Image (cartoon, rainbow, N blue to C red; front, top):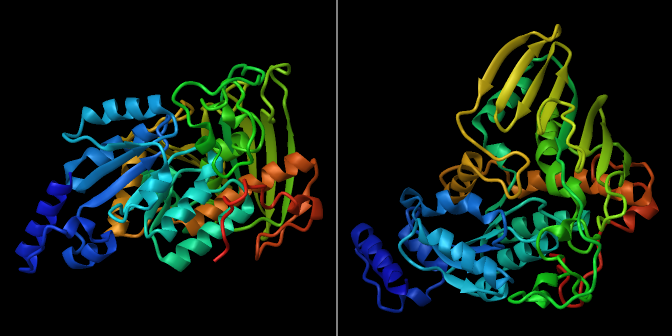
Length: 448
């Protein structure tokens, strides 16, 4: 791989600039040779987190037109690394390095960008470490585990001037871009309300029992920034989402991020003035699920605008006719938007226009993936090369993520609260105790 990289750089530079490189080019920092070779240089990437989501990047990374070199596959579970290596071996003709510890990758000066698809508690700390080490970041949702981390992500991005794309891939949907532009131009009059929804029929999860970590799992690194505790059976494999707040952000952080982002984008609002939440665990009451499985949240904004979130994790009733989506109401009509396109209705409920996407993207299946994810990743690569703007820059993604944090905080303290619509801060002392979280000593994110 190092030889191929030297050959590429030498060929590019000698052809374009007539500059000869020595055999020590591989030791040159990515930033240094990028300034010489220009926007057509190969982007060297790593993936951190090889569970259900990494497959969404395969097409973008393996497409030779994107000129990407996958250098590392990183996960704290050996079986995940091995499975990902097999998957990529079918589409690329070289072998990425399999690595356990993301910190080694972050310290590799030859890496330009990192895809981060870890459990939620790793997202912001890992991204900030990467930016500090001169890496661009594709950061899966939720971009942060708590409100303070969202603020820090934006501060780090501005300070280090890196490209940070949030992984809410519907921002790259051509149909969503089209209809939201039309909404902003008045196609349904004054847009005043949005309903964002998600339903799933997740089953029972085991009650946690202390156990030895499974073979191949680095439990210490899995915990990373989270406070240390003994391993409990089945935690590492997705159920960390539902086993308390050390790792996950419940269903709202897990899935509401997407639809709430579309709702906020369509209504052209920022922070709400008030948050009201009704939530609880109503299905499979005796199982090990620690979070709510049902939530209805209302966010009230200035200008008499409202966003409602209707989330059902374990009741598959198809209330809105599909598994997930966003409905926008206006003074002259309404719009239904999801990953498959949009439908425009007049005030009588008559369908005026429908634009179905020719692309595919998973809705409620674990992991997801599809053409929107590919388009989103390619947008990330093009932004690194300076060819285009990000469709979901972190400063926008962090604001949408705040809605999920508000909802979770309201649920946890069982109280509504007001929000400063300019700063996003909460006017409630109890709520503000959850603005951040407890970190394992030495793992907290240092303010810029």
